[in-house]
Image (cartoon, rainbow, N blue to C red; front, side, top):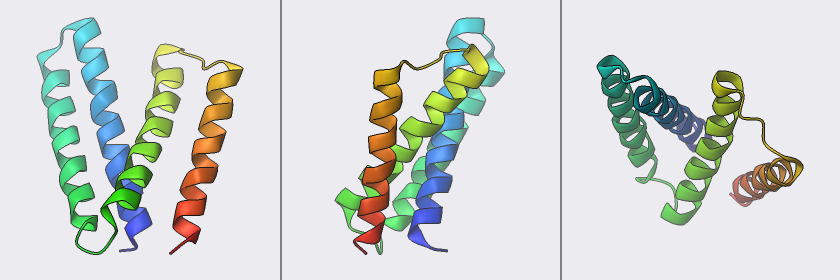
Length: 105
């Protein structure tokens, strides 16, 4: 599997874990805690697999950048946490940065 797809999968898994943990701390469901921990751990294991062939700095930047974007989208959909214009601009730059990193390969 292409490293960028693997990193995207890892970012999404960790984002689901982050959102589950946020919901756990707000609602107090032990099941959400378990799901959050499991998804975070799975995402980190998937991410670590890319380190066999990708540069650690570029892989980490891509993984964390995608995670930030997915968590922000999840926060907007689940909790109605709508980012302001400055945040949206930053995320757009983040997308451009991820694209530039991937084009460099």
